[in-house]
Length: 233
Length: 83
Image 1 (cartoon, helix red, strand yellow):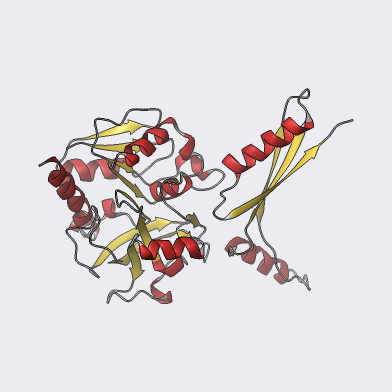
Image 2 (cartoon, helix red, strand yellow):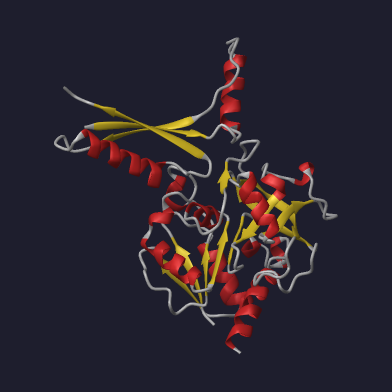
């Protein structure tokens, strides 16, 4: 099993992701510079958080033209796993690998704090070790995390169980008060129809050590390694 | 040949930045302001010897593929023709 962490100019959560995969998930991992065009040696790639291309034009808008993104699209089409976190989620939406878009937070602030998310679909490769409606405490750190999509897209997300995480309070209630950024229907993370591409605004790679406040993020990574192991058996 | 490209949020998309700007304008005492929406403006300079049709097509394609996100934004292209 091998992981790749894609590095764009301006990525800044690439080392966090690398650290978690190597130390806590315990799997081999490489940094993959955005000029690379071959991802064939990996089982999963992480598109990490940060400010790729300085967030010029729109968050994630320019990263989608990096050479590696063509390879990421092919990789996803082969059914391999693509995991976009924060800016990575924005990039996957801009690249058309996930539907919708992430806009400026409703209150315009950059929000950096622990929030709660509820598992909406435990059948995905990224959530199979979690329980339905389980609540995780995971930090967010973004100014553009306000998920928007049209009604048609929203209905299709619901029908196909593509909403994977919703912002909620500590009791698991997803309501306006527990929505940090104005996202439609409290959406914090979605997957594609096949379930092998996930994007989420919260940072599970920053929640893998009790010392840092939470290790709730670990089960997301262990779900993924679990799924990859099943496939190779 | 130059083209101007205007990228604006679709009417159905809320614009929190525009709302904050509108609020500031109101604080300055401007009355009768119903709404302010923020957008982006680009100037694209192209070779002088290409046709208007080519220039229009090029600018439209850049606007569609690079400058605007069709999920949330619309765009409008205007050619500037030097005589």
